[in-house]
Length: 502
Image (cartoon, rainbow, N blue to C red; front, side, top):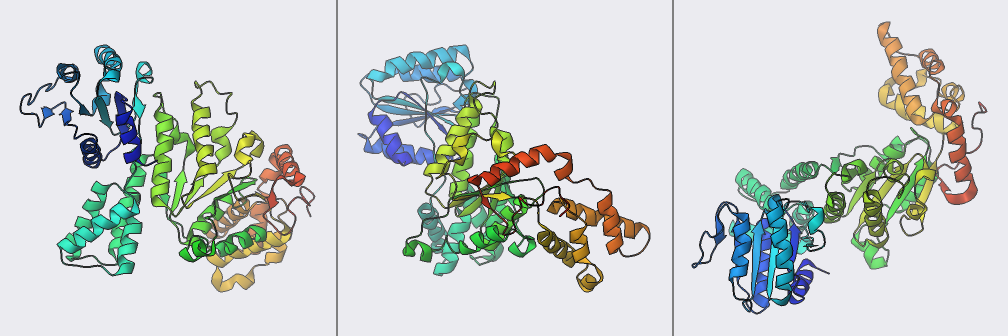
C-alpha cells in the first residue's frame, strides 16, 4: 500500500491522530494537501511553534509559541466542519502532561468528527501513554519515477535535454536521497558546469555517502576488493560468478527473480567480510554496511523506527548489497533479553522483511556462532544459500599466500617458497596469514632488508592460531556444518585435517 493509499484510508476511517516521521516536510505537506482536496476539499491548517497557525485569515498566528493553544484551536471549530491539522515538530511537546492529556481527550472527541491531526517529525519519539492513540505512517523517499520527473524538469529549465543513458544514470544515482537533497546536488551540478554531465553522477554519490553517514545506522563502504583477492572458497566463488548478471533487465526478461541474499557462517578471519566487499565490486553495486547495534535506542519505538529507516534507505538505493557483519552478536538469545521485547520486535521486523522483500537488495550476513542465532533466521526463504567458510586447506593457504605476497612483492614473488609456507601453517586462517606477513615485514624492515621466507616462518612460529585457542568452539561449529545444514564454501573439505597439522 502506498503512502497516498494509506493516508486516504486513515482520513476516511476518521483516525484522529496520525504521526508521520519524515525529514521531507515540504513534500509530505504537498501530498497531504492533495489528498485532503480529494476528500471533499478539506481545509488544511498548518501550525508551528514560531508562527502559530498560518493561512487562516480569521486566526492568523493563533497558538504562536503555545502548543497547548494549538490543540484548543481544533476544539473551536464546529463539530461538523471537516479539516486536517498539520502540527510541525510537535514531538518535542508530547512529554508535557497537559499536552498528552489534551491529545488523549481529542482522540476520543474526533472519532465522531471529520477532523484529523497530523504530527510531522524528523523521527519517532512517542511517550508510552500516547502509543495507543497515535498511528504511525511511513513516508517513503522519492521513487525512481518521481526523481525522473524532477531531473527532466530541471534539465528542461536550463535547456539541456538529457540523453537516455545519462538520465537513467542520474535517476539511479539519486535513489535513496530526499527530494530536497536531490534538488540541492543537481543545483550544484548546474552551478559547476552550467549543464548536466556524466561526471555529475559522482557528485550525487558523494551526497549519498553523506546522507547515509548521517543516518548513523548504515555506512557506505567503497568496495575495491575483487573476487580474485579471495584465496580458495571455490564453491562460493562459482556460486557468485553465476549470479553476476542477475540484477540486469535481461535477467528479468528471462524470468529470473532478484537474488535475495547469502549467509556466510564460519570461523573468524576466514574471509567472510572480504567476500561481501568482493561481491559488491564484482556485481558493480553500492555496498551498505549495517551495524545492527546502532538499531537499538533508548526511547520506546525508536529502535523499530530505525529498523524501518534502514530498510527504507536500503530499498531506495536498490539494487545494492546490504552487508550485516556478525549478525549473531545482535540477535543472540532473542526473547531472553531484558529489554521489554525491543530486540524481539526489531528481529521480527527484520526477518519479515527478509522473507517478503521484492526490492533488489542482496543481503550478505556473516556469523561466527551460528548456534546463537534463532532458528527462524536460517529458515529457507530468508537467504538463497547458507555457506560454511572453514579454515583453509593447504592448497587454499598456498593461494592466500600467493594473493598477499603478489600484492606486497609482485616483482620477486619467485623468491618465496609459497608451498613450504602453506605446509608450515596448518590451522591458520586467512587473517592470521596476513598478520604473519605483516610481522615478517617488521622483522625485515628492522634489519634494513627485505623480508624472506624464513622471516615469515619465524613470524608464524610466534602466532598461536584461533583454531587452537578456541578449539572446542570451532569443533562445535564444524560439527554443525558437517551435519549438512550449510553448503561448503571450499571444494577441498574444510572439515578434514583440523588440528592434525595436515
